[in-house]
Structures are given as structure tokens and as C-alpha cells.
Image (cartoon, rainbow, N blue to C red; front, top):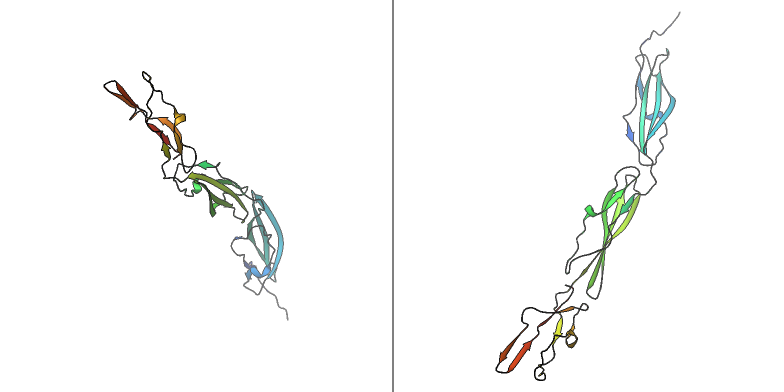
Length: 231
């Protein structure tokens, strides 16, 4: 009695579709993920080898598997894994401190922030806001974060200042003065006192309201002064 298997049909082997692993992960081969069938029984699955290639930060690893039946017929398939290898933080840049116009409340804008990464384009997000006030000056700090695909981060602070002041300065002119006869008065800011709740205002002779009038022999001269604060 003689028995013989007549089989010239290759088995069928199926590898799973390509799979993206978490960052900085090196794959390991596992035959449990491979399926194979044969028309004459159960084929044997074996691991043939590994190859890998890297483009930028992306490494592609290929495991080659083979299914072999009892007659030596075989079929191969490739199992493909990709993983980004990146442990370098992105670089983020905030603009220089900016002084805003008076009574302006700043609003955050990611368009003013720039960030780069060695492995792609990082995501920019606002992670915090703080403010402090000294006198009339309020300083607002927006903290921005750049995060790359592997979770590496970098942060920077955007600083904006603004004076909050809706109070007019205070100015005091001296009382009326009778000058000696035939004396023409000249304006002098040193005779004027003034103050402001948020600093030292500027004083200037106003063109509106300054002038003179004469009744008989008496000439009355009026100097109108104006003080203006930073706001």
C-alpha cells in the first residue's frame, strides 16, 4: 500500500494591514497575527526576516512571513509597521512684549505665535493666562505651548501691558495777578501745578481760550493751560 499527497497549489497567507505604532516604539514579530490556509491541510507559518527604512523621523519596519504546506508549496506576505521616533522638543517663539493702547484688554491670538519641529508641524495651544497690576499698569501674560506628534512640548510667554485710566488729571492755575503798569505778561508753566493718578501728565499752552481784552486802559490777559495724561 502506498499513499501520496498530490498538491501543487500554494497555501494562502494573510498579513494584517499596515499599522502605525505609538511614537518611539520598536515592533516585534508575532506569528499569532498571521493567518494561513491550504487546500490540503494546515500550513506551517515561519518568520523569514526583517527590513526597515527611515525617512525623516518615520521608520517603516517590514516582517516577511512564509506559509509552507506538506508538499513544500509556499506563499509569503509582508507585515508592515510604522513608527515616529522623536524625543526632541519643538521650538516655539512668542513676540516681544507689546504696550497696548490705554484701557485695552488683550485677547489671545495663536496667529502671533510661531513654532517648528524636527518631525513635522506642531500644534499650538493656549495653556494659561495670568495678570498683575502695579498702579495703573496691567501686565497680562499668555502662556503658549507647542506639542508635536510624539507629545514633546515647548512653551513661551507672550507679554502685553496696558494702562487703565479714565480719570482726568488735576490742574491748578494761580489766582489773578495785577502786574505793574505797562507790563506785558509771558506764559510760564512753572507757575502751574498739576498731577495725575497714573503718572506725570504733559502741560501745554492751549490755543483755545488764550488771549487778551482791553477795557479803557486795563488789559486783561488769559493764558489757558492744558495737562494731558498718558491715556
